[in-house]
Length: 97
Image (cartoon, rainbow, N blue to C red):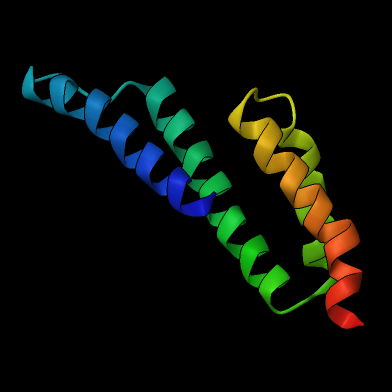
């Protein structure tokens, strides 16, 4: 999901920045705020993913929270959130056994 965040951030950034800057305008402050939030979210996904790969307990809980948050995003978010919850609850214990 982190890599999809990178692709989305670059795509949205380019779609807004190129026309805005080519017209001689400036970057809208609202866009700068949204871009900052997108970058922070993407960075946090990479950090949580690395923690899950190291099997850190806090990474597991953060991944579960992200899975719950992504459930309402029908259809992709529901599938990803359900898979995350399944892997971080049931699958987590199976690997240790």
